[in-house]
View 1 (cartoon, one colour):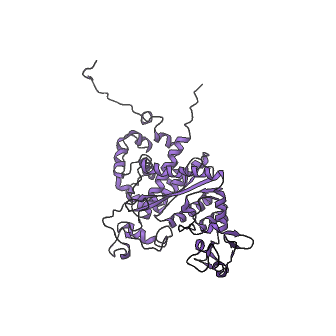
View 2 (cartoon, one colour):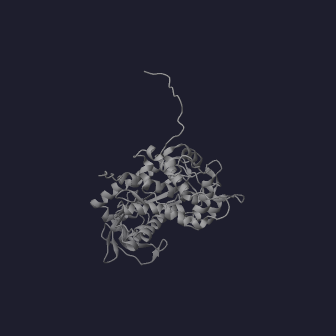
View 3 (cartoon, helix red, strand yellow):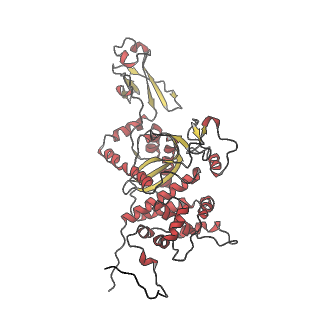
Amino acid sequence: MMGERRIGQEALFYEFSLERHVPERHLLRLIDRFVELDGLRRELAPFYSEVGRPSIDPELMIRMLIVGYCLGIRSERRLCEEVHLNLAYRWFCRLGLDGCVPDHSTFSKNRHGRFRESDLLRRLFETVLQRCIDEGLVGGEGFAVDASLIQADAGDRNRIEGAAGLPPKAAGRAVEEYLAVLDDAAFGAASEVTPKFIAPADPATRWTAAHRGPAFFAYSTNYLIDVDNAIIVDVEATTAIRQAEILAAKRMIERSVERFDLCPARLIGDSAYGSAEMLNWLVHEHGIEPHVPVSDRSKRSDDTFSRDDFAYDHQADVYVCPNGKKLVTTGRRVDDGTTLKYRASKYDCEPCPLKMRCCPGQPARKVPRSIYEGTRDMARDIAKTEAYQTSRRQRKKVEMLFAHLKRILKLDRLRLRGPCGARDEFHLAATAQNLRKLAKLIQVPTPIPAT
């Protein structure tokens, strides 16, 4: 039965508790257990003045950013509106019912100022990672590494030819950051090749068509994860180029060893990390097994013999051709000092019945061999093991994190410009993913009933 709602008199006093109105299984309540910001507040203390208007508590801004990145609210203006209206967001941000939400412009001022000067967002990521380690979610035995392209906040309508260089009148924070990283191997010094196009609004981005579709300006987010529970052990922002991604992998591994004493027994990656120099770095400098496909371009497509058809004699340091003749080297290194050339005698090659399948256009056959070929052979042997097949399946965990990053957290396009802006967004997103993983894997303690 329905009828008109009649209330004789409104209540004079109300009793309302935010604590009671936030569900026990709400994501923010589950995450709140692992957000520890006391140390970060102390680090920021020197950056606040004792005179002028009262400063906004940095914990409030960090908690609001965590809400935004955990729940896919990308716009700071919209985030302020949502925190103002949503009871669960107010509870998580410790605002109560009458607390004032800071203006959206406050985020910009603090991100470009105090937060970056103190490297706060990096500290926030490491604080959450330390909690993951303390909770036993990081095994440290096997790591996986990969990179994913994230579209930059730079349209292609105003692009200019890369050969023309940056316009003299170009100015702004993103341009200043670009000039500051010209010598950084993760950005400007990653490649000597002149980019095809430059975005004046964010010149540190890279014009790329790696997705085999329409080209766009992008940065790369690089993840190093522990494969036990897919916890992100480190994150690095680079320009969208393979050389920079390899450098990022090295930086992240060294940082995990230095700051958390995490040195993996094996590293899982795709063929982008299978260069001879990278494999040698893993094995001989860090003692890490490379569960990585070897990057090998020796295969020939013209039906002539490839390098694999030549047997290498380790003791004699010679190659033996399919007809049983030896190829020797002078020991002189070529190709930036990383390759040896093994040559056959033309007196052996000219009368050889296999010449047309070996070197039809040359008087004698030459075979290049990397000075790191021993490490490459080791990686090839690992690829034949059962453990390697397991690693191939575990590598998909990184790809799943990138899919979660773009589809659930909505980070398929950056909102901040410049290398520092990309770095800030990637750190916050990785922090949000680790917090969500903690909330999922660590159960809420069951309260003990009073006796």
